[in-house]
Length: 137
Image 1 (cartoon, one colour):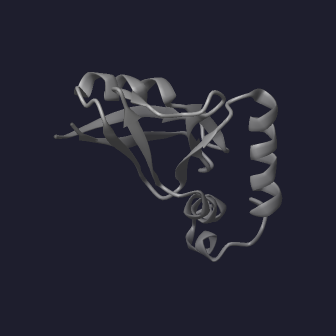
Image 2 (spheres, rainbow, N blue to C red; image 1 turned 90 degrees about the vertical axis):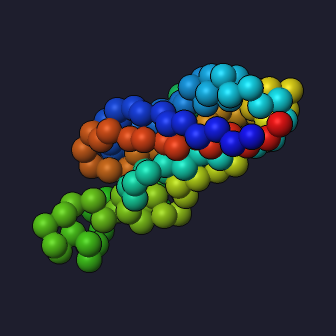
Image 3 (cartoon, helix red, strand yellow; image 1 turned 30 degrees about the vertical axis):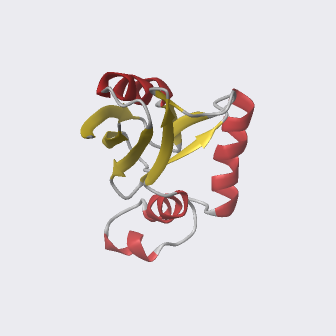
């Protein structure tokens, strides 16, 4: 069985981190798949998906790491064409736009302190869509 759905949400930009664990779990629970996988794919090139402990200190450290590693203030070639989000494209390419999570007994398999998050690196609010493809039996 393959079930394809979508999660839509609004972001704030500026390394906005949104916990999407619950909506993903709800999509999986409603699909009727007992064992298999769920693939998440973020449509867009200035945001990414990962897992992290969604705790204020870790989230602050995560945001700081991106600014230290890929600062917004560097001169990006992309920005020479009237854009100002070159940093967001580079950050998103490193984080990645997709992930696969096992489904066991009808539930997503995550660690105790592990949440699924969308990270929006763009420099303005955006409407985001995540394709949720659930496969299994």
